[in-house]
Image (cartoon, rainbow, N blue to C red; front, side):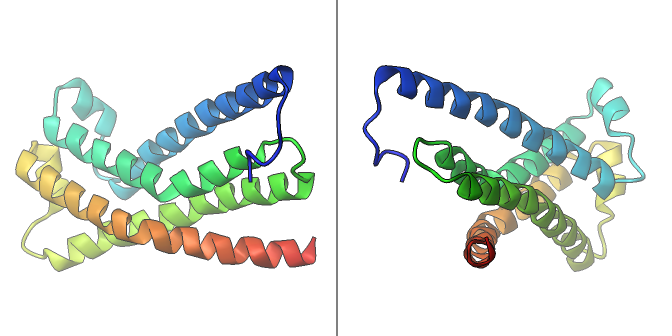
Amino acid sequence: MMDDFPLDPVDLAIFSALRLFFGLVLSAYTAYLGLRIFDALTPNIEEWELLKKGNLAVGIFYAFVMLSFVLLNHFALLDFLASLAPGVDLVIIVVTFLNFVLSLFLSAGVLFFSFNLINYLTPDIDELKELNKGNVAVALISGLALFTISVFLTFVVAWILGRLAALEAQFL
């Protein structure tokens, strides 16, 4: 879709700069939202204070949450960036951006549900308490479980957004 149009060097530079700018801003924002989701998932932990004290377990789990959130949203971001091309209708650009925003909310719900599912499936381990204590083993296993769920659900989220984009296009 994005490379169907021959570009002169000026157009190539403009559209490349647009993609780079929006890619940087939106990917940074997505990573930031991943951090905010971790804050919401762990209300009994002061993450930033623990990170300042060198709590490796919190840092590891934070990294898995960010990776999971970015993974769940990367297809929607790539679709939006691909729509920034000459000849693409403004409606398509708006729809792909709205799908990216919807993806952020959908992914937040997926992570919230996944984290609670992991906690439910491990009743003899209080993950939040263990992270607070700096238990790296719990951080690795819980974080990897969250990431694994995200790997499998990435395609489901992309599929849902694809179906919604088709519905949106019918009404626009």
